[in-house]
Amino acid sequence: MPESIPLIPIGVIHSEHQDPAATPIQPVFAQGSRGTVELQSDYCEGLKGLDGFSHLILLYRFHEAGKPSMTVTPFLDDEPKGVFATRSPKRPNGIGLSIVRLSGIEGSILKVEDLDILDGTPLLDIKPYVPRFDLVEGARGGWTEKVDAKTAFQRGRRGWRGGR
Image (tube, rainbow, N blue to C red; front, side, top):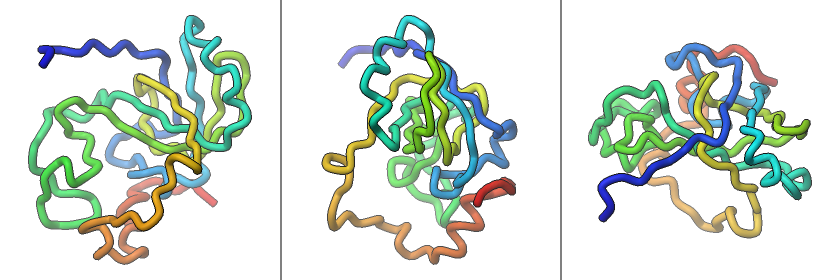
């Protein structure tokens, strides 16, 4: 295995979320939160054809997550789990993934909604969300299925007051 795999940010994500402890956890709990994805000019040609998609998959670096931990207590549960059974940002490579709504493109700026990402987060990649490929029928949610919707909503929104 290679000792390192260099990743170069292709842009920055701007959001209204300034405090990691108050940022919604997962886009479903960030409904109504708007922001922008500012792409470096070298990559603008890569946006061609993206305007026909309603949602994007953003891959980014958890730049303020702190030291990785192999065991974490997830926001939906009070029992520790292995980091790979959670969406915790305290991961060995600190890579995050969010599916956000695309509401417009203006040059190198993507306008997005349902944004659960901290302001100033380095963007690693953008992929279109394609329901034909990305929707998995019969998927299971493991231990998360034991958490009722009300608890998930309360814990997932944390201190964020916005939304619809």
